[in-house]
Image (tube, rainbow, N blue to C red; front, side, top):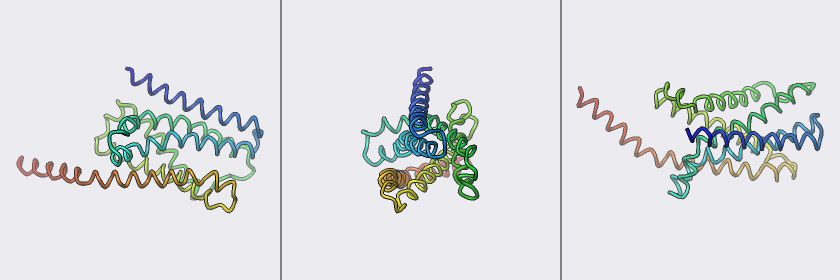
Length: 214
């Protein structure tokens, strides 16, 4: 059961890191709207530092070879660490809604980010091997790809919006993360492109087996 303790260490470390960063911002700027918004920005970046390698690790391994395979194999631990850190961010979002006279986000944008949160917790839930085993492998893979791409899109949308803000401070804060997001997307596309011939071979072999069996 060694993997459980290692996974717990990743999750616990990410949770504590995000909590400490958020608490430090609240202590510095207060628990009002200004301090909460600052804490939200910091915890989002903390969570993204775990999400990015979980999302881009496979693409890095496919593109640049064995050097990044250990990172690709840590996708599960990194993904759960991301969910742990992002949970602190979500608690701060709930607090911001509670103290704001009007909803910080509403309408389609709130739904858009809400779906990303739901998908994050669905992935975390089915990362439990006994639950994942109940899903057909193809369905689990499709769910994983869909959820990861949607969450990456939610992050990228947030970072790009900040990067294009006509505020120098926001530009410096958001542009590096926007570039990381775009780079990760390119790596994923390269990974998908390189995997297509192998998937085609598998599909052909399966069709041939069905034909022989018939």
